[in-house]
Amino acid sequence: MAARLLDGNALAAKVLDDLRRRVEVLAGKGVRPGLGTILVGDDPASVRYVEMKREDSASVGIASIHEHLPATTTQAELLEVIARYNADERVHAYLVQLPLPAGLDEEEALLAVDPSKDADGLHPVNLGRLVMGHPGPLPCTPLGIVELLSHYEVPVEGRHVVVIGRGLTIGRPLALLLAMKRPGCNAAVTVLHTGVPPEAFAEHVRRADVVVAAAGQPGIVTAAMVKPGAAVVGAGTSFEGRRLLSDVEEEVAEVASWITPRLGGVGPMTRAMLLRNAVIAAER
Image (cartoon, rainbow, N blue to C red; front, top):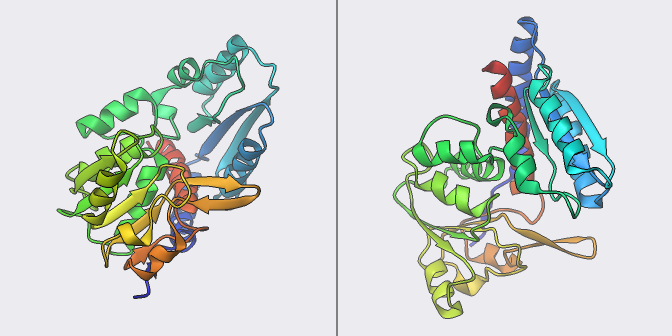
């Protein structure tokens, strides 16, 4: 069996084309969407990630408003920049890049963000809206995964989905989103985590029609665990030197019917959803 690739690069390109058209419509009304980024310190991965976000913004005509603060920045100085972004009409949505340097309170910083300008969709107010089924910015990676499954016509509604990992950025909000009664979702969802014994862990995965691995543990999903014909999404990553490792073993492609590639799967969709959140904020 040759698994069909869930190509995030190809779908993200279509999303960006749609956003270019929407940005042009806004420009005709005298509005240019603005995506803000706040980077504290010089963590190499964070620096590169913010660079990619700014490049993506430029590619669709979104203004990129950026503030790069030194690692010695105090909490008060960071909160001052956040307050400035909240008041800046050019900034329709923005994010504080994590992790912050030691000594800075991430929770206090994130709570200070205006929920209506929350580009990542992870503000507690917006997560509360997700729980209640109310409109609001949705978390980028979970939304990107749902869009990916929907575009490639992976059956999800009424099916058994296993989400591996309960982290705030992917696992928890994805489980909520997939269980909602909305297009591309409405699934029976099981969340696996470190509290699940290894023997039970494998059994849960074998029963899944869709598996989303977001644990950040290389090869945690093996071919022997996967039900033939299932869809498998590798959303968790880690590094071995400069090599990006997936939560999903390569051999899984011989068993699954759909699978994300090691590169170009979920990542491009996460960045595309970030830009979409910014454009939606500008339209609103």
